[in-house]
Length: 395
Image (cartoon, rainbow, N blue to C red; front, side):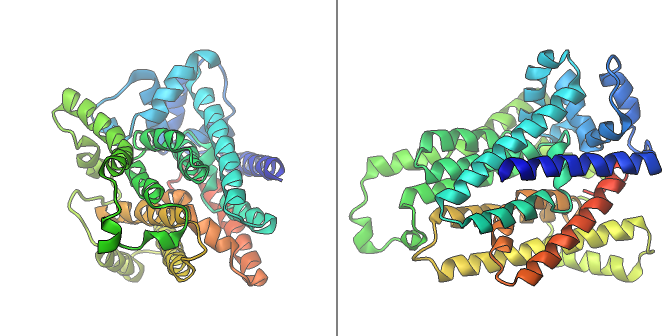
């Protein structure tokens, strides 16, 4: 089932991209084709494929070949480093290296995810729906692009899988590397936290005085040290940034340079909602209006479903796996963190890693709602990938 769905996903995206390019050839809005001639001039890449390195993908390919400059430090190092390491196997063709590795990472992530869902007792039918919602989410084509989504997905599901298998050594390694891939990797500490207290959510109650007397200090300190592995990954990148720029938080301070009205001052969620409502009431109904509405809708849907998921997990805490609770908290942090810069920009892409959303969507009992949502996802998937291939920013 997994392999068939994955092949359908790949063929579907390539077909949409190919047809779109035939009808509306890509625009060079972001200089992707100029970068194309610089990074892989020897081997011709079909134009409908090269667009999968649009926008941030350009930065990752440049990082893989040349390393950091000042502005690229907003991008964490693991993905371009892996592309750089494996580029000799692809004759230093950085696009093909990144494109193929992204597919390998995503396929590996799907395998771990499938096994994890089996481990926590999800039915075959539920797993089928989880995979459908994930593969045909409107922005799932980013898993196939030269972006970090595929690698980050592999690392996150690797953490929950090995936690559930009680192989904490592997879990902390995946968590460590996740913090070198994206800033949100630091939140895998919430998933690792479940390892301290067992496998059932009911065991995550606050300590009582009676329980405190039973704690053995050394084992507790050992587990707390294990929790810090994601922090070590982030600190490593901060030390590297300090050595070369004298600013350990440069990945944060350069955010305004990427536009989208990002701010280095913390903006609360109600303020972001207010900004978008103002946009809807005053802005022209153009493509940017469509993107803003897509960002707003994606955040509201995913955030609302994650809150609902958290409530349902707590209501059934005696039976639910604690790793699901940790995954939900990670998913919430993953989608909330970008909003602190004052915008929902790129939220449709960031939502891909709020994995609890897809699990809860699959557990909706009304089949008509699920089918309707899936159809909406597929339609939006086609629309967004068509715009993306043409050179429009959609996430």
